[in-house]
Length: 401
Image (cartoon, rainbow, N blue to C red):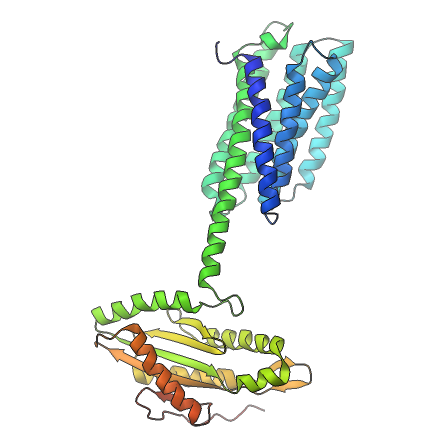
């Protein structure tokens, strides 16, 4: 059948292996934190090497063109599967042992059916059985790895391996029932399809893993541009975008909206006395305490340096003040256990601004909260003030002994 000539398909596998191998190794070098791509790259190059030797049948010794060539192809297939399993963070130790055992069986079988009892059909059945077992193994492993990030790509990968299982099983059946082959290069269409199955697996494994890695990189980049790396809460840029939508919705629905600006008291003095590293620990602990006191729909972000900003949808001034007092207490107690010479007492000031129905810009509302925070700081800190500059301060709770 024209287009399915064995030598043509072998040559295609050689070129594809060189192309995919080089690309995968380059990707592994650029993104070393993605596991499996190095194994994938070497597997494609080993495929290329094995098929090149296979294509030189009758031009080089049989030991190289038959035994070494087929062992290289099966070893490449094993390495490809190990790369896939490594990318999926599967333990591949069991498969590695199985692959070594199968390669030893194949070596013995190929030596026997090449030099002691020449039988091409037996060699084909041996290698097809091993390939079918490997393909079925990786299907089961991929299907049991539940990962939403790679769900779409893994389905494509499983399809290509299932196709290989069917092709290799059919190849075993037809080879068992057909007349003994005298020359593999003159083999029929089912043998051509076995080479096509390997082509399909090479292509789908490379693109499935590459696209999955690209998607993970995209998600990671999205997180990096929205999350403050120190405190792991929203950064100012992300918060401004979220706030514009929340404020617009509150104005359309005529619902109250409150914003609280939070600033750690005497942060510069703490920094000068204890250093930058301790202050980083302090900010991480502060953000964790604040986040632990919030409702699910509240939005907390790092505003700048030691300041935080909190957006409270559907929250009036009275409720916002109560929330601010709760947060103030959570910062104040217990003392921070981040200093090697003892505990550190830290307080924070809170500026509250509320809007209902008025069509003011988000930045205007934020400016009102800044004014309230300024008054809270000038009043000695450790307090809560509303944008009207009126003091709303509950009695300071007694520290638990």
